[in-house]
Image (tube, rainbow, N blue to C red):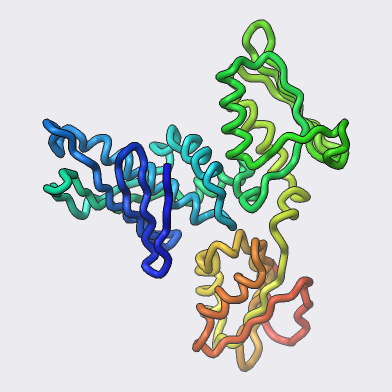
Length: 326
């Protein structure tokens, strides 16, 4: 797969198995627009390739949504691995589609279809977090591996899984890494059942499965679900905003805060308070990039008569009036 981007026009050109897809990014909550240009061989008609065109468009929309959800761009080998991982899951992630245009191009012969594809962004982001891709997007993390019983095909599958998760093997005994990195032992028994144990710090997780991939995902989802692991990537800040004439404005902002941008991972309303002259609010935010978060907030709050502040710790509100503590 080759992916190139034309910055300024925000158009991505993607070539996969001879087909070209032009993908224009859309907001996270919107459909992904995909223009698929599918070469027509002699004797082929739009009807005969329609299924492949739709599947290709769905796949590229899911991959586009996945890349938009990540805090940092993946290197090309990891993009390819992520595409391999996502392809069999596309049907579970696509929620709808609308064909907004279709035409046959003469020279060179091609079937051109424009689609708006609805993708379950929340489920996809949760998947990227449980696999570890979200947290390791910027750089692969080290781990120690003990492997036995794998055939060549299973070793190739393991290579893909490592790339998707964002891990690389180090030899702890040779002093290549600290002793506190996660250690994974995978063993395939004579009955064909895989057994795995993942040890990290004071936690140990074990599992067994007839297939390597579900076992890998099960073990690493436990690891990347740890707050201490997530804290390596996500920071916590407190957002204070003031200037609303009433609480309704603050509540409307709370409802829309999750759509600020990719710099915001999740948010929790800490309290709302009402003074005689204005309403105020405070939120606890998990962010991948504090500076980018500040820019995103500035762009949506600019010109609305509001002011905001980001701080590392919560500053208690002590003014008189109505206060909602959550």
